[in-house]
Length: 287
Image 1: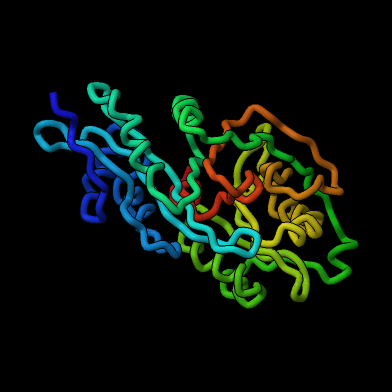
Image 2 (image 1 turned 30 degrees about the vertical axis):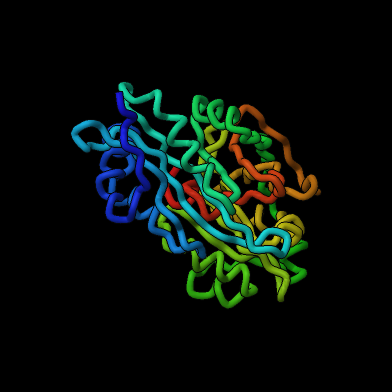
């Protein structure tokens, strides 16, 4: 019996592939929103949008999506392939690893999956993906009048954020500001500012700020008190951030929670602290 046909997902295949995902993987994501996630222009001449297989009638029977991006890591521009939306019909499950191998056989990329299911995580670990620290640092949002008196502050008005950012942070903002489920602000003072990307969430039945990413780690840590104060005044009791993204423990009341799902990556040169949540399905879809 011949193997099902495996082929790259071209841009013209996205409507059909994303309709397949909407029907079989997650009906809560509309097909057009899913397709738009693959169409981001994030600095890479993308080779495809992943790979799919077709049944004997030529209909899509499974696929694995790929979102490509380039962003600087420690001063060097690196290329990433973010695996997402891996779905294969039951009758073709034996072809699942064939799809994954097609993606990771592409040279020149670091590979990530930032929202794997437990089954996908185990499958990717078999393919030499490394689980990242899943712990979250939770900070208690408190007033911080001393920092505000020293001139530190928050800029959250979309028409003013770009004016306060350095060139690298401004590009990150421009690359992500069109996603309506993300919120943005600049924290700091003078030329010492960081872009912060977050979502409103709930933790222990209380409103919380879930940090998705930030551009200047030292600045982010330095101004955590003023950031927490802003979130408190916005009605959020805590701030939650992945521990792996923090260069050191915050000098601010906090605790650490575990038991979250692992994100995974595969790279010969990068570590987990180098892997951003930005430029991935984690921001391109409302997860």
